[in-house]
Length: 400
Image 1 (cartoon, one colour):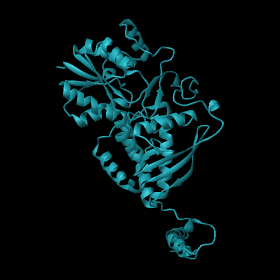
Image 2 (image 1 turned 90 degrees about the horizontal axis):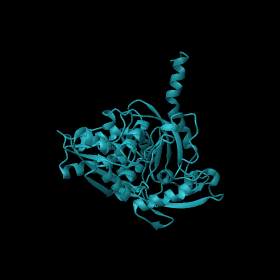
Image 3 (image 1 turned 90 degrees about the vertical axis):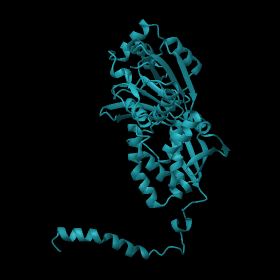
Image 4 (image 1 turned 60 degrees about the vertical axis):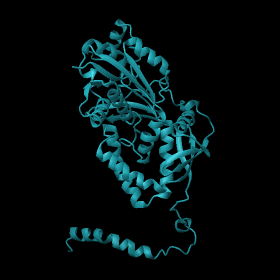
């Protein structure tokens, strides 16, 4: 018997309808929880809306610094990119939201937790894998897998009948998710992968046609793999990321339009803006390029797709992700230094990098005269590596 439910509440269409539906369906008390991840909303209004819609209590927690420090930065240390393009802005927020939701459920003595994710998407998995990892006996209610609504249009009709205020409209029904790391756009008018997104959709980045005609140069300093300052000014993790969002957004950095493979097996078109995250990804790799041993770097790059997949699929609290993170963090000990980047018309170009732990040697790398490297040594090196190639060729010709 479910008597009290903690709902992950955003104030959007799905979760606004969910409060009323949960009360009607389960005759239960609904507590709304909204995580402040710098989603660009007036959370006082979100609180008021949840109460007006029927929530008995509303929790709003400022998680911005924790989100960047304990979730985004560890992910960036792994250079995680899903399917070569997506920087995982929505994926990485879900385990933190779900973790706090479970904490509130325990505090309130709630029987169940609920979310507004659809039965077709990834978020249902991300939320629920976290719930079960942290509280195996929790009851999970997923309205989209239970109610009779079959589209966002039907949700809008329901909200209008019940006087629930929502911002989505039938003319512009695409779904958005925003936090300090990115904003995503899916569904509705974006479901045709051939059509270009509407120009007025974007919110974090300036259209390329309107970006400055002069480039911006910035320097980002890292300590043990994490960014600590911009142009010499130290900032907290959240403030640093937000500053890079402003700078990158002004220059049109960080837009992508992709068709990705969801965990459930469906292909989905997603449009994303990740200005600050794009800058940090390029800057980190620049510092790593001069501070990491070749084989260590290649090993990390080979593990990155698996790490990114774990986050995308919702396995943040899995033993394998935690084990990978431990190794990744150990490797970051010497990833300290500064990257200089040039931002111009949507481009983010590395134009300089330096580190007190640099493995780069100008004497070894130069094409000019030097007395460190004996070029004749390369002959034996090449012949050793050619042995198996020679053997294979001889076998094909029947000479063995």
